Length: 241
Image (cartoon, rainbow, N blue to C red; front, side):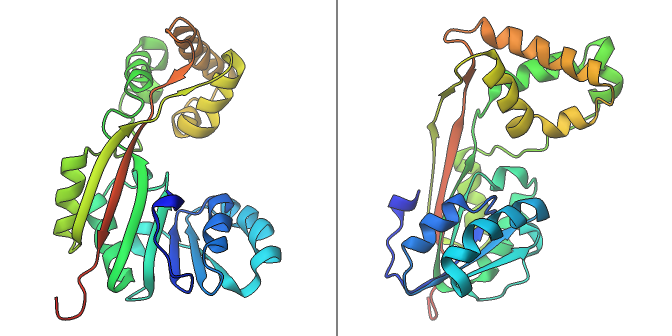
């Protein structure tokens, strides 16, 4: 994603969904005369990012706790960069409007998130398991916390929000975990944490996870995460466009 950027080096960029700040640091390294405003909804993530970023970059980075659907910025940024964040926002029309409004005229968006058939195998198994009698009272009516749009839908939404020069694509990005424990820890921390919060009994959570891990172990190859990435780019209209 960073290799796709064409930067002068003095821009002001929004990192939308910065997480722990690992990629934010690499972005700042490409902006020796610029600055980054790093936004995340999680205060815990921002605390980790601050420890990582502030000693190295000082005043060139500002950390802000904010919802991407309600950004407190207008015409503030030369560009917006984002990875692995937008699929956690269910209202992409609203998201893209707020991102567009945060850009200066002619500003760019370069983002990647889950899209298309992302994690289809795991999601199908979770849905089937959630409908069984043991888990149904906790999960039957629970709606997935993600929006995995296809390229065509995403393009329409970006255009509707006011972006021009829109380009979207979906690409496979499979990840194979090394063993059952790695797979278990990965889906607990990265994928299913909101599902598991609804299973109040530890034994019930362990049984739920155990069945998913067992099924993944029988795949070929075993413990495959069938990730698909949605690439998004566009620009806000220049003055006088």
